[in-house]
Every structure is written in structure tokens, then in C-alpha cells.
Length: 385
Image 1 (tube, rainbow, N blue to C red):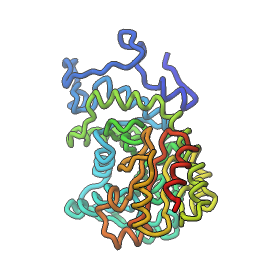
Image 2 (image 1 turned 90 degrees about the vertical axis):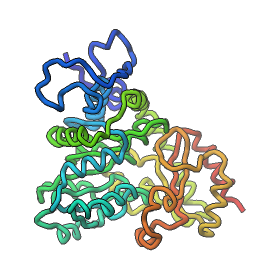
Image 3 (image 1 turned 60 degrees about the vertical axis):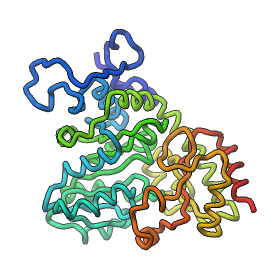
Image 4 (image 1 turned 180 degrees about the vertical axis):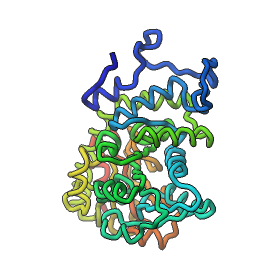
């Protein structure tokens, strides 16, 4: 009898696990094999082969990820960008048009602006918090709309429910990057999004030791994404599957701790006299707060802020902090700080970044698993004269 689980804390541990367990192993074994015996498969995509993303390690992950967001299906990929680019190339072809959120992860933006023109795919940017402007950008060849649950790096939350309604009314595929929120705080398929995308390198793995991506959503679309991924070759190797699988089991505990810590740290930063501005949807002062409170179960572990004194003081702050690590990426056990202008959004011109509100001195913080009180003490000391 197939087991079903009600709560996320149980799902992250037990959903998708083999039943019966393989040779009684409580932990899913690593199937470090590139190929498997032929068993009469009639379809190319059903042949058991590591590049086709159908080893036992892949299958368990697909089932677990689908269960976490109450979706029909899921597929993992070699990185978040492998998942994002494959999904976009699955639903868009030469002659098609995309509506895409204006402020989003630099890698995604670079792919759309740098690669789409040569593929014959057009796009228009939209302000995700302003639905009244979307229809003016809609064309007869528009096929999809792409947004982020929490934008990188300004932590904005748009009118996500209206994105779904607009997509349905306009017969578009609705796509959302849910990396910053994670399935613990938000499950896009429950709202009606067709495809939910993740850089599993971040919260889902949670230990800064593997690169992986995932696409979760409608079964028919996931099957198409899988077939495209099989051709493009963005496969997650079995050992990386194992590490991601292991990391997911602590996802609920980690994210809820990070939610609480980030809320405390954001409040401290907002009250600090040397901090000019703080971007965190959990703060009542945030323009996104009402939407985030309505859509999410938690506000996430990502904060961005600016301090007085511009770039010189920002660099002084980064030099003085002792607990956080100055490094790109996010979602791990360690608190990480970075300047998006020199990492995630370095591909954008200075003028373009500034027009979106991303200054050269904007600091992005990924809150880890350390004591929030100790992090606040460290931040306070680094901000002192």
C-alpha cells in the first residue's frame, strides 16, 4: 500500500523512499553505475542510463521533490541554471515571446538577454508588482511568463496569484523560480503555477557541497523538460543525487531556523542608525510584506541592505565581520555575505543595475544556522565606528 504523508517534516524524510527499502538499507544507497541492464524498454527515454536521469537515485529524488510541493512530477538537473535554461527551451521556440520579471537572478537574465536573440526568441520585462501593465506587453506569440517567488537580490514579492490568473486567461505557461522561498515557505504548484524551478545548490541541499537544480510541476510539462534535458545532457550524477537527497531530509528544520534568524537580523539592521535601507519581506516596512504574508509560510533567510558611507564603508564592513563568510551563493549552514554587483549580477551594466535599485554597495546576506544573537553582535561590531 502506497504511503502518504501530511506534513512537510515527514515528507522530507519519507516521501519517495524505496518501499521495500533496498536490502534493508535505511539510507538510500549510491548507484554509481552509468548504465543498467536492458529490460525490454521500448522508448529511448525509458532506457536505464545515467544521462537519461532515471537511475534509482534520480527516481527517489523526483518523487520526493514532487511530494514537497504537492506537484504531479519533478526532475533534477546538474545545476539551477541547467534546470532553468532547459525549462525555458522546453516551452519556448524560435518565433515565441516571453514575459519575464524585470529584477531577477543575473544568470537567468543574462541567458534571456544574451542567448534568446540568436535563437529567435523575443522577450519583454514586466514589473511583477504591477499587473495593470502586463497586458500591454502581451503578444499573439507570447507563450510563457517567468517570475521569482522572492527576487534576487532585492527580496521583492510580486503579485504571484495574479501571475497565475493572468497566465491561465492568456494561455501561457506560468514559471517561477522558488529557490529563495524553498518548499518550506512556498509551494507554487498549490497556487497553480505550471513549473516551479530551484537551484538545489542552495536551500534544498543546504550544505554548500553540491551543484544541482530541479523542475517541479505538471506531469506533461515535466516529461517534456526531461526529454529536453536528456538531449542537452545536464544530468545530476548519482553521488550528487545522494548528497542532495541527504540534505533535503533536514530542509524543514534548517529553513525554519533561518526564517527566525533572518527576521531578528533584519529587525536589528532596520533599527541600526548606520543602516540606510533593508530589503526583507518579513519587515512591515517592506512594500512586499502584505503579499509575502499572504502567500508564504515564512519570509526566508535572505536579506539585502545598504549602509551609510557608500562602497568604502561597505568594504570596511565586509573586512570587519568575523562569523559570516564573504562568498557567493546562499542557503547553506554558514552565513554568507556578498555584493551582487560583483557576483550574481556582475554581467549587468552599472547603469542597468542602478536603474533596478541594485547599487554597487548593496550587501546580500544568506543567513545560516549560527546563533542569531551572535550574528547580530558580529554585525553590530562591524558597523561600529
